[in-house]
Amino acid sequence: MQWRAGTVVDEVRRWPGAVEYTVALQDAEQPRVRALAYTAMVGEPAVGERVLLNASALLRGLGTGGLAFVVARPDDLPPDPPPGPGHIVKARYTPMQQMLLAVDEQDSPHHGALEDADDLDGMPVVVADLHSALPAVLAGIRHMHPEARVAYVMTDGGALPAAFSRAVAGLTAAGWLAATVTVGQAFGGDHEAVTTHTGLLAARHVVGADVAVVSQGPGNVGTGTRWGYSGVACADALHAASVLGGRPVASLRVSGADRRERHRGISHHSRTAYGRALLTPADVPVTALPDAGLDELVRAQLTDLVGSARATLRVVDVPADGMLEALRTSPVPLTTMGRGLDLDPAPFLAAAAAGAHAAALSARP
Image (cartoon, rainbow, N blue to C red; front, side, top):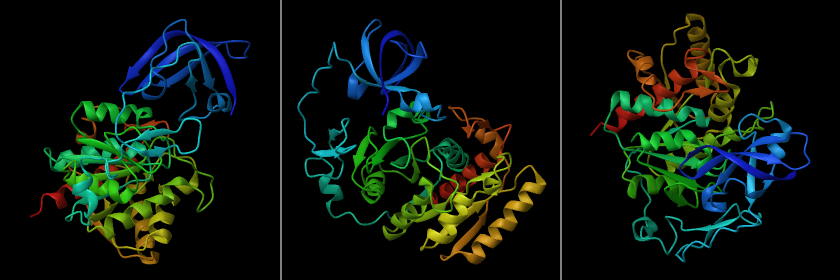
């Protein structure tokens, strides 16, 4: 952890739960930097105020999360939050740990509904590797079922604070998301839950969702090895959906523009998670891609995946009619690995196909 001290120069932008500032550093090689403050943790520093920063990701030049974070305001500590229920600690045993009210704990008003809850009543659960798939999945859902009530279950494979995601803020403001449930060590959703299982149960029995979408927060981790990436947990989320009586829908990670061969067509992330780690049946939606050569590659890879998978994968061909138009209605930018819809439509179409299929399942009696 690399510490820096600085002074707030101005406010750049804000969204629910977070404010981005320009901070002038003291005695540093970068005189001014971008710094993010989570308002629930440190409040809102004022212009001219001294702040202490964690600058590790900024100095390393990371992509997602490559900015400084406000750790403390030494001259103006924020007031204590009002007393309230809740004893579930997240970001446990770190200096930034918080005590929160989980939807499933004894003090929660929803504890009674979840105490013996054990069934999702057939609710479709779309599981995606990357956080950037979320708006595309929602576009697909709305394309088929505009009135569907959708909950986002955010796991802790990427960013832990939900407030880091401007996409979640924008999708919620636009009415595309009914609620966000942060599970595991992730925090800051409309509801907190201890596990993915209780997060899914809360999506169904507390939020009243027709469809749940599960993905990690922004900033996935990958090492270029077969098993060393955070998205391998997709299999665990599909297992949770299955054991709870939901309909597991595996969203494919697809790209036609990624320069890394392991991510061309169907990413090795999807091939490993769904072909090697998954032990329960799941639907795998696919749709026609504008690039005929890429479409042929994806279908050949999918045939190999289904043939070698340990679990039964049911391929569902989703009509592409109107899908690109539906994606263009997204209230937040569509971008993945620095590429947008026009540069690389494949990842968004694949995610939208998963959403459209889940919406069709949810509309069935």
